[in-house]
Length: 263
Ligand code: V0D
Image 1: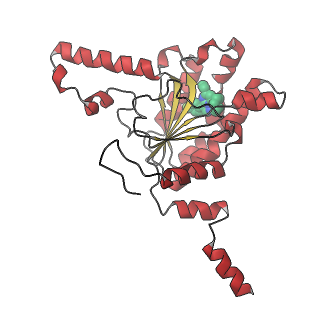
Image 2: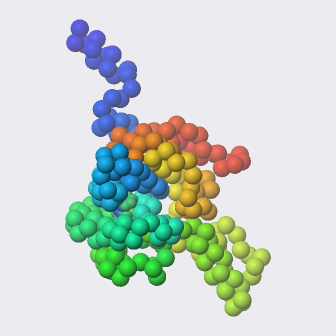
Image 3: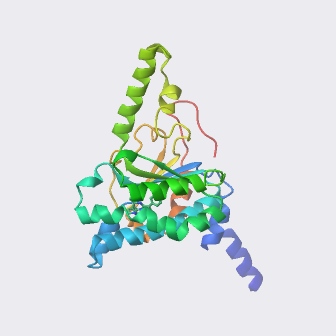
């Protein structure tokens, strides 16, 4: 009877989260995962709590997701923390949000350093409050030599403005005679974006049921797999990330032509 149980178990899908993580590691892990961390305000509303309580809870979710990505061997995790469109939110909410990087890093930076994580930031630095920017820059400097997971925060980031900036800098190079307009191609264009040093995301995750990009990495997501879930970001757990990666691994990726990626 016990033997039968064992045989039955071994032929079933892996069941515990740890089993699923190990199973996942037999297939292609996305090199770069990008996440739109949506639903923090809604999480708070549902509990009759202020929106900032949802943002705080959402901040706490970043930690286990970063840890799991590192364990899986993901190379880059890009998190959309604050968009260029978020400034129109109530002043107090924006002020609270701008304190979250300091709180997050004050709590977790020692662990991130311990785990060999490299913190990076992309976005327009010019409008970010000095106290926020200096906390982020300090973390960037202190982890610059780490060669584990790159934890890339999109902060005051907007994709169209990133693209316009790239176009202007290319036009500048052409004007100076360093480049001919004719030479411009995908590779050269990509190198002028804020992600010039990173590979494009393989997997985009957006939580909280919205099915849109909201001006996030429009160029870089050209070939990514998209995973949308109704789960609110503060509720997003390791099991949800594994579910997204399992779905990614099941899809055959075709780059719009004959060239296909192996699993
Ligand atoms: C609020 C859910 C971590 C999204 C996550 C300034 C909305 C929690 C950071 C963070 C935010 C940013 C940079 C850094 C370290 C941590 C963060 C903001 C919002 C906006 F170097 N969470 N987080 N930044 N939220």
